[in-house]
Amino acid sequence: MTATMKAFVMHGIGEVGIIDKPIPRPSPNDAILRTTAALICTSDTHTVAGAIGPRTDLTLGHEAVGVIHELGQAVAATGMFRIGQRVAVNAITPCCACDNCQRGYSSQCGGMLGGWKFANTKDGSMAEYFHVNDAIANLAPIPDGLSDEQAAYCCDMLSTGFVAAEFGNIPIGGSVAVFGVGPIGMMAIVGARLRGAGLVIGVESRPDRTSMARKFGADLVVDFTKEDPVEAIRKATGGAGVDTAIEALGSPTTFAACVSATRPGGTISNIGYHGDGDTVPIPRLDWGVGMSDKTIRTALCPGGSERMGRLMRLIRNGRVDPLAMTTHRFKFADIKCAFTMMQTKEDGMIKPLSTFG
Image (cartoon, rainbow, N blue to C red):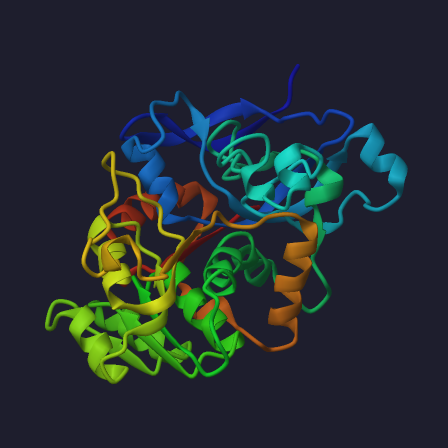
């Protein structure tokens, strides 16, 4: 008889639940993890709302850590990993062998957004066990002294937030505006400070997020419901605009505001998930009618074990502590309740943690 597990799935657009599924088995280059901790991401709610089209009983989730349950033959033969070892896996799991990976764009593995496999082209990690493709490239051992919860934040929140700063071309002492201070935006604030920003401005309206943005290092937080954020940013920068504007929400309005708030020669760094509509507008005049020397960079969460190891090193050595973002904790049996709260951000939810076993 095939062994089974519990998995949190998208039955169809707008429908979720827990069902039984067979415990996956690894091919020679893969691995199976027994999940110990996982986070729910807003992008999971986008998926259930239909952002990537219909799915049937697709396991959700892409921010999970666990212990090695089974190794594929080729992976086991390397001696790099052992059964029972604690490991983290990034939300993006590239092959590290295809043309795009070899060109340095591993998030686009095999094609545009192709590194995004969990809860997209294969089952995700919000289950008692989950499958990891190309395990040698994607299993990242969790160092002693780092909790599973801390490591789970490296899977997406740190990696995505930090790449916004990395791609933002932030000069030492430069100015940065982060539009949308959810968990990704908060880590973009931390990333901007790590990259040497001298002024970091958050754009947010929720008081709880405003307070946390300051905790993570924002020098100023603009409430867009009370004032025009572009004008406020220009005022804070002596009329110039910021060197770097980070779009961390995925909204046409905030993307346009990023273009407007950036000074000539600056960079718009987009990590927002634009899940609706066919186009994203660029304000023509604030773009200098196409000739303002403004650069637009985009990124999908960088994956791979090397990236994960570096992110965990930052936590271990005290450069960042993401645990303040965990506002709610649930057992896996209550994951449907956690997901519903994440959809509405009920009770001031920022990031919910689910534990297994």
